[in-house]
Length: 400
Image (cartoon, rainbow, N blue to C red; front, top):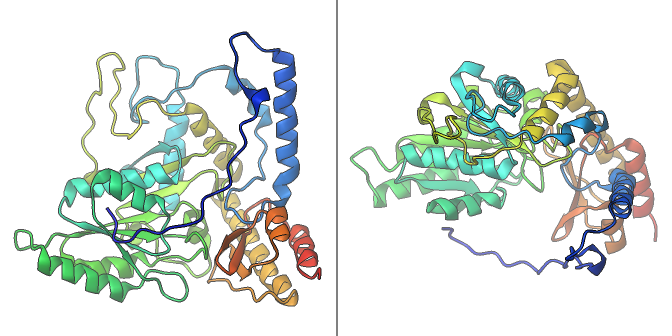
């Protein structure tokens, strides 16, 4: 349930290609394989020009091809065995441990698992909050990801959308006023109804980092507080940013969602959700036939995604991830410098990979796959975005 309904133009439709229809008889497997390989080649060729979206396309897991010949199904909790035995849960546990450390927690103090992406992580975090604060509203900024509104609707929670500051962060004073009003109109057992706050760590259009500590303090006028940090795009960046944004468990977050296919990079959408272990239900056996405990939202979960994330993080380690982030930050500043010379008025919030600038001609937007909102476009300097690509974009921007 939300306060406002936003209308946007309908998207273009993806064509329904008759040659891809699945008929009554088997198709030629060699021809279909050739078609799929051609598609992969075309997508790889286009990848260097995808500048406006946060997925890091600089990866190559082709050496893990044999992993595609077996179903790996991580049923239930990562720490729970299951009857099938065909899983990658030990690898999943290693991924969760690494990202818990990245998010300022001791691995033994949090529960987590590999998700389908940031949206599932938000849903899990807000569902966890609802169990403890059933009378609370959800508070998020007008820059929060649209999946927050979807999660609120699914959970039957009221979403209060608050204004953002000029830098794209949620305004703590507006949060304090809204939370205080909610306490006055809906008192609950003398303690107040509480507040569920979504702190966005890397907003969609500007890459801004909400201040978890300030937001928790502001929301406390409503009673008990649960802060979910939507760190899908910005969590690993914030962890290594020179300005040390306050975003993680040590700063007051109760649950955190991080995407795996964004700054880290993976060929399938994936992520990790983490929550304080004391807020998560005790494990119970989900069913006799699986013999697995399950506190996850999904029952069957991709063991392949866990394997790919483990491989990506294993190749980096904490020091490699930090070096990767710092390189991306340097590329973002290079983008600001070059776009300034191109005369398109770039702006960048502190330690963000997102560079906003004047929206260019439609052909440039299409060529470089720029994300746009009104008069503004942006690029995001994830791993595959190079200085040479920025230089070529700037040449296009100077074209009359």
